[in-house]
Length: 79
Image (tube, rainbow, N blue to C red):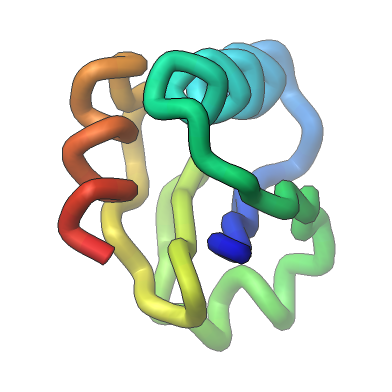
């Protein structure tokens, strides 16, 4: 199962990011667990200075902007 972490404070942009991630998962038809990470120390531990961010299976894939559903699908297909 794919593990996804959405890094952010819970702001509207972070909520939209999570919605895009859920849509990407649904469109790809994969099983995934989504965890929201709001702890700033943990977020910074990934080297993220600007949220939102996305971590897939322990690897930071992107941060600092709202990624589209298509971009997140690309991240998921990369592994």
